[in-house]
Image (cartoon, rainbow, N blue to C red; front, side, top):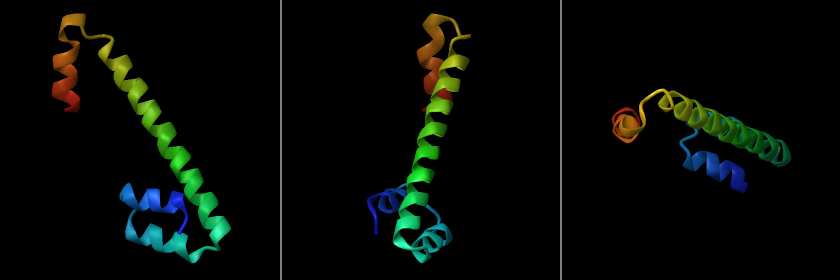
Length: 72
């Protein structure tokens, strides 16, 4: 199993998706796993940016408490 597939498994990839990836030839499975990981990283960056943009409308002294209440 490639490192990318192992990473996806550790990130909680559903069992049926993992089974599908493992059924593919090794090079295709690795390429698909790399693509999925890249998409997840892009999504995470977009969510972080959106979160920061949303917090920018909150007055400065309240940002930290609001961020903690909303996002833990």
